[in-house]
Figure (cartoon, rainbow, N blue to C red):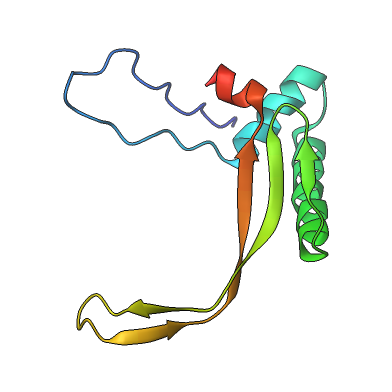
Amino acid sequence: MPKAAPPAPAAAKKPGKSAAPVTVTMKQMAAELAEKHDLAKKDAEAILADLVTVTTRHLKKGARLRLAGLGILQVRHRAARMGRNPATGEPIKIKASKKIAFRPAKELKEAV
């Protein structure tokens, strides 16, 4: 039995009420790609999973990823710093850390 497609977001919303954004999963993206490029869904899912694996590997090495039309992914280092516990106001030391930063491409900014 085939799975039913997820419900389409409502076209008109009542003013003043903000709805939660629609979440698109990797499986849904794979299904779209499979249909558009005449692939099996499992093949499209495998390609997306490999994309995540390759992206992770390059980011761990410290590389910067430029995805044309999408943007740039890179690891940024955050220095250790002093902060405050919001409940008690007590000063605490925050350890140095790494974070993944995304800078959208001009094409993506203009499209959204």
